[in-house]
Structure formats: C-alpha cells, structure tokens
Length: 100
Image 1 (tube, rainbow, N blue to C red):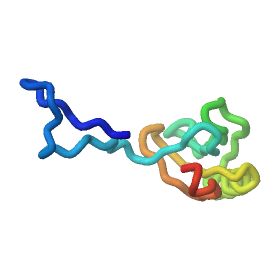
Image 2 (cartoon, helix red, strand yellow):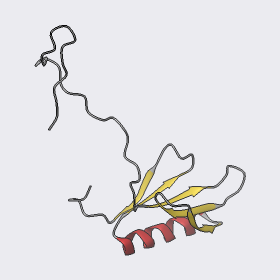
Image 3 (tube, rainbow, N blue to C red):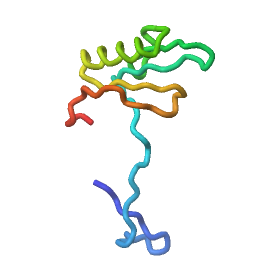
Image 4 (cartoon, rainbow, N blue to C red):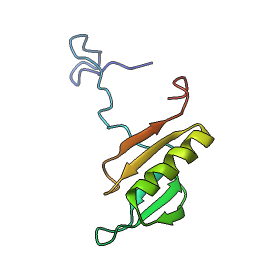
C-alpha cells in the first residue's frame, strides 16, 4: 500500500500530490547473472551470479554474452552487462514475469 505524502503544516495527506515512485533504473537482483568489464585497460570480462564474486573470466565480449545468456536460461533468471557498475543493460530475460 502506498502512503500519501503528509502536509508538513497540518500532518494530513495532500490529495493534490501524487505519491513518489522509485525512479531507480532497472538492474540486476539477487540470483541474476552479470558480466562486467574488470578494467578499462583490457578486454577481460568477469561473470558472476549477483551478489557473489566472479565465477569465470573470459577475454572476449561475445563469449561473455554467450555464457551469461546460457547460464541465465539454465537458472531461469535475467542476464545483465555492465562496463561501469552503475549502468546495466539486460541482455537476456528468462525470469518469470510474476517474479519481477
């Protein structure tokens, strides 16, 4: 249930103000598969299951994407790519819509 914002003066809900919604962009959740660049200097990609540390390291982007898609399909989760640990791109979606 979403609570309405309270008027600071009277302490009553302001019906003219919509409740705030999260503007956080989508990103990986626990259990999702993630591939990320380990550094900007080398073409090295780390593959992990969120939130754990890396499970594998590969040296080609195409190989990393292929592996995370296959692993996500096997685990029935989403697969993500990031190069900066801030912005994420979903590269495969196998999670049930009811779970999202």
